[in-house]
Length: 100
Image (cartoon, rainbow, N blue to C red; front, side, top):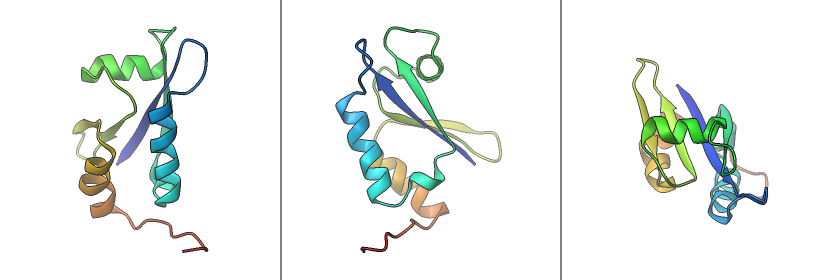
């Protein structure tokens, strides 16, 4: 399984607030280590990796996740909790922080 986290960079180069929130949740919940790649959807570059992934999957919001399964199936998730419940929880154990 390969998981790509797509987050958006705004025209001014800053990250979108929701993308930062989701990335913080991935870190906090111990899931970030299972993300294979992070692709940037740059608003000022329609050919950036993230923008191409968005176009390929018909997605117009960020952040989102693209999951390529071992059998070749590819699916995209735009809702963090659905992604966690359907992809991460059934396949991985979260990394618990020392403070937990």
